[in-house]
Image (cartoon, rainbow, N blue to C red; front, side, top):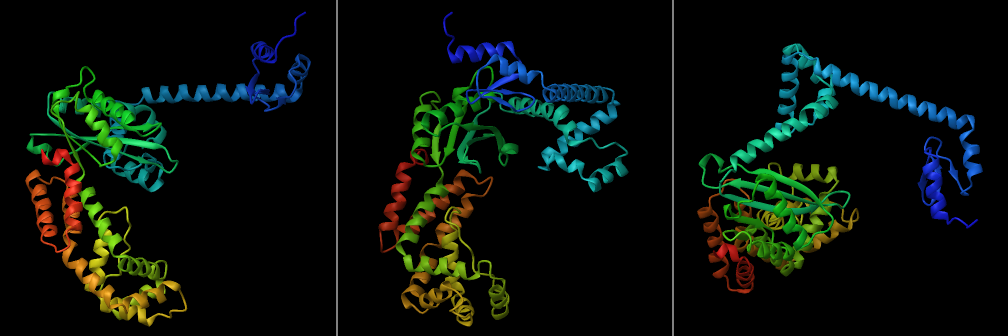
Length: 421
């Protein structure tokens, strides 16, 4: 009799004995988590006859039956609710989602007791809301959005980020052009996880998102403006998509462009950057020093803690130290420099005349960058106002003696082809 290969034998045993599954090339009992190291039929039969296996299998089957019965009972109860209670459950779910309140708040005793007292309706469990109402509300909202964008001109924006598990998540936001009531509104049209981030996956996500809004046929000529960051893969994806969307103008983020100029300022003033970083460390997680600062300079806000990824915060910090240099110096000098290296470093930099001059220069010449970034982030900003703010920055940098920053600014704008249009 010919010898049976191990993969074929494993498949045959799995088919013959349904209580086992394959894990890492070995057979394992579904109910006992016991592995069979050798592919022998006698060992499998021996395990199936044990008392432990029979009890575990019986217990598992009983649990599945109870769970199925509970789900059926839950559906029956939901279907038998009075229409008023059903409407209350649905409206409650809609109100929580629209207000950005987690659905698990309905399980909070004070919250549910309050609703029961003043509405006389029984507050459902969060699982009930998720199972019977969230999907219906999603379909209803999507239907409303499709009705709004029907034959309308759109602006779209998309970006990609990564979550705590390092998964790539892309978001698609859009708005309606030409209607005054829609001017301040924007809608999240799609969110998707991408296996990788490149121009092809971004382009596919872009098309998929518009297909959600126009399921019958994408209106390619109705997409007029697309905004993204200036990442190379984004720009490449938009260039390719402009063949399909002939009227689409691609504009990269102007605030991001100004941030690149601001980063150039930060790199050109390393001593000022050292001062801001050291002062941040002095007051970070140091409540005693914070109290001392408030005591010595009442009414003066604490030194800011800039973050590189928060655009314009470094320039705002430099402007703060220029305006409140005496207050910061008085507080730093009152601290014991042996407590931390950052205190000694701050003392050294605060006594440096060149640092003081640099702070004053940055506050005078580059504060317009930070203020313009903040203005450009305002919702509902008109196109005329945005262009005016950029023109102000251009005139400010153009009049500077050092042309390096103006050259950087013009280089950033030159790459933004859509802005010129």
